[in-house]
Length: 224
Image 1 (cartoon, rainbow, N blue to C red):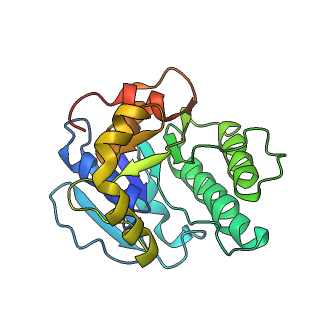
Image 2: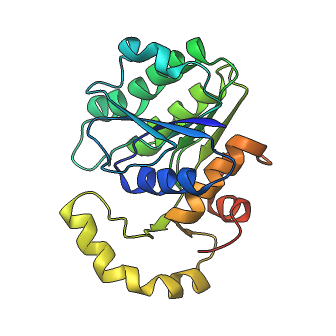
């Protein structure tokens, strides 16, 4: 399976990239990044693209892909709805259309979030915009599309979250992950499990198009 990965420098994307490099199901990974990941592997090729909403310059690179793992996203904290929509909805759909043009048989896996409003009409801004993005992707003629909705994600393999404040929170609460796992198994996962679940959905399919945390963990048995 040939994978195109967006967002490989973020916490979720780093986990997805590591699992792609480990997986025998993945033959090659093309990372479209704003800055280099710093990783080197025989499976890995990187394309630095400052504006991922316009992929016309790298169209040929996108041809023949079997799957897209779309891990690119931002927090809505401090953002206007217009700015958040531009990144979350507009950019995602622009990427999806470019991929459909070059690789119409592709499976698209979108990292959304727990609490996303599937109606796309709720009052919570980020949840509504995420829901609209999910619905637009599900309506596009991919081979398949899966919306992945993680809750709390425990980083593994030395991966760190972006942003100093988030890293401080993980430093404080991360050691309690075994407790969260026992008490709230339907709400927590790890970067390893999330990455493996995305690859499995892309390669073998999943029971339903919208995957909540319990579905993610069920798709990714093995090391936590």
